[in-house]
Length: 134
Image (tube, rainbow, N blue to C red; front, side, top):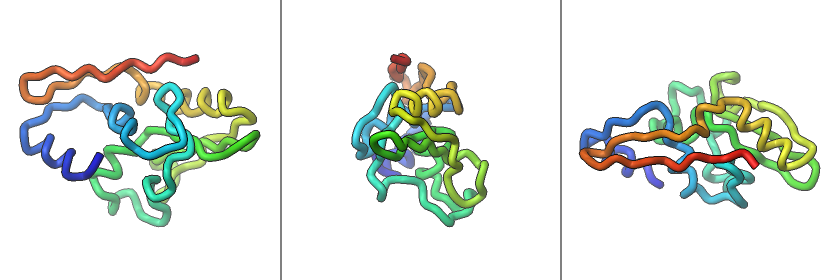
């Protein structure tokens, strides 16, 4: 997914409700995705550190704002989220001793980020799949 895609959507009169980045994040390189939560996204795709939020691109905000992700391995799984808790980097949300625990922490941070969302693109209705906890 590229910044041009979002610009193209806006130019065509796209009317989106609050949250659809989970759907688009399926295109972000990552080790895996569990119930909509990215696990070990490619480092070059993560939100940048040291950049004040008001200086971030619209694309970066649309893709990552309030959408927790997990970084780690074995028994060290950290959950991060670009949510304003820190003014120039993603916030550290918590740490799970297992990947399952980390997913639960991530989904608990902003549950609405993982909810089913419907939005319209011109006259076509697009339905974003609902992620189920498992």
